[in-house]
Image (tube, rainbow, N blue to C red):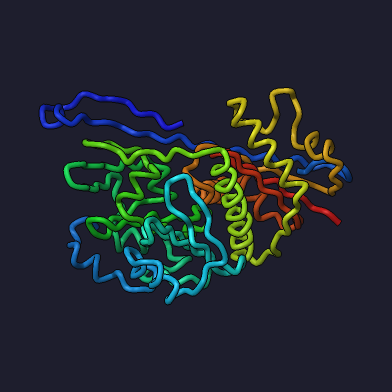
Length: 348
């Protein structure tokens, strides 16, 4: 859960107050192998220099209205709700490109892109960490000012290794997600400062105020959860394509099992593969009479969205092995609020 802690500072900040926002993210993976019917599971660079790098269709779309987006990329395959007031316009072939444009008030405010064929100049999926660090000089603190409000994003060691934050201009930022197993760029999130403060990817000190959190109905949460489930499915297959693995097929029955576990964790405030009554993945699958040769499970919680959860799984050895296990051919995804479950199956 996010928590806000008031801290005392010097006289400069007494009038407005100064706060720290911290985000906790959880990941867990389970993989049990048995036989049939058993679960297997450089900071001195000037802004002008950095702006000169902003060439490429994706960057140019930030700040544009949706008619420009459609002229450039066509009609999206769908529009996904988010918990943050904007909608993702989704463009993907589920294999070599996956790109989402976050639209709020008819304007593109954020972009997420991964896949071999996406156009994100001057970045390229597969760029090395060292190459991009040399070009942009990753910093452990990055600031943003909006009027009288000031925000300072503080990156810990894990952030610096997996998802450093790059400030390209006063109101344009990049979260560069890396695959730490290959040391290569896995995906990028292009964002305005306002979106960074809304989604709170990093610990944040601020003076002034934060954007108000969205008040969401349960019906709205259902739509958001369904969207994130589909995003996880599509992104998993883009990952598998990257490593020359066959795509997974969706299994609705397995998805129900995954959803029930995410819901159980949220409703009962725990985080584990084992339910509080002692049931594990094997038990949950058998209760639904699901036949399989082997199965595995990844769970995550409190990541700001499904895309961040996926990058977390990619950078954890056990979760990565499950997503990239060549014998799996089916997947079921269940999301409830910000609890995420992937169930993988090998079936004849």
